[in-house]
Amino acid sequence: MRGAGQCLFLKPSPLEGEGWEGGRRRARKKKESSEEAPPPGTLRVPTSPSGGEVKVFACIALLCLLFLPSPAHADYKLCNATSYVLQGAVGLQGEAPATEWHSQGWTRVLPGSCASLLAGPVKTASYFVFARSMDVHQGPAKYFSGNERFCTIPKDFFITGRDNCALRGYESNEFIRVEARAGDDWTTTFGEPRNYSLDEARVAGVQRLLHDNGFRIAKIDGYAAKATLRSVMAFQRATGHEPTGEIDETLIGQLIAGAEEEQKRSGLNLCNKTNYLIWAAVGFRGPEDDMSSGWIRIEPSACVKAIKGKLTQPSYAIYAEAVDDKGQMARQDGRPLVWSGTESYCTKTTRFEIRGRDACVSRGYDEKRFMRVDTGGKPVFDVTLK
Image 1 (cartoon, rainbow, N blue to C red):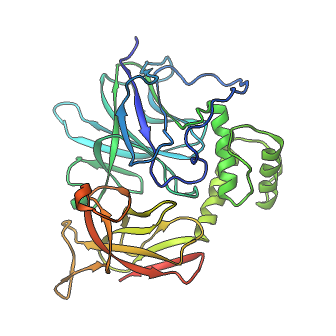
Image 2: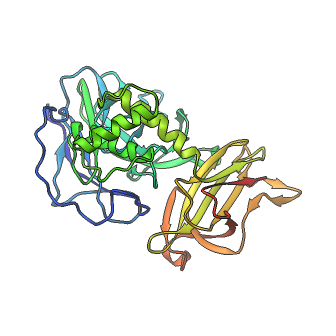
Image 3: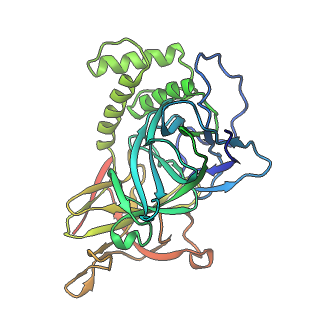
């Protein structure tokens, strides 16, 4: 039975990194591939290379794809037709009499692969999905998000309720509404401007992960040409694996592990040396203007990377505040436990990436005073919050 047609248009984060500059990609001839099309029931959520905050809008005069049930075994699946390793989450409402909302994640979806988000037959209902790129990649995270708020945390989670996320110590993210029809199977596919097939996405994912591991990659295009295969074998030799040149999930797992180690050697880390949960934001110079990004959730005794990759600026701006177990501002010696300074940046109550520091209030944002932190030209720098 055919499901309801719907088209969603995704704008990526304004903090775009390698592989997304230059506006729309030119149409290219698709390479012959033995890979089958994504399964019926697929929503392909494309990304647009334009700037702006991450939002999903109903499309008019754009290609609309239908939600269709599939004959495969009973599951709600996410498919990844991007060059990034994605983590997916879902929000839904329980059935009567237990009608509470809940959200759960994360489901890792490798480039060119599909993974089960929910087991069992799909019901006629509203599902809410969200995906983000993993932190192993260089550059800012990519988000697939909508306008339905649910609670999340960086680790695997099952959270009951979708209100007052920050007061309860959770992050909040905007999920995409999916109107599913009853059937054995349902699939949501995430894509990017190059419109990769799943086979091409797997190759493009390997190319991006090679780049994340410090290997020189001329371009990320989804083609397993000789240069890509040589880089694969060079990585395998460097990490003590047999240089087969084979592109498979084993290789992707090895590349992810290597990229995680690479990330440890660079970036700006915020370390929480208090007994409270800390919410932090960072300000820096973007390609065209000053930027602010947050909120970064830092548990007691934990360090979280606020800026990924080699630090290229002599200093960064930081704002942070600690909260108690009731979600209220924590106090130390009778004063709010806040790390701030004299430099104004824009913020808002939910996750944000904001271009520009001027006229925050008139643009609908809050304004906070950030403190300046000098990194001394080091490729990796820790800021201790205590």
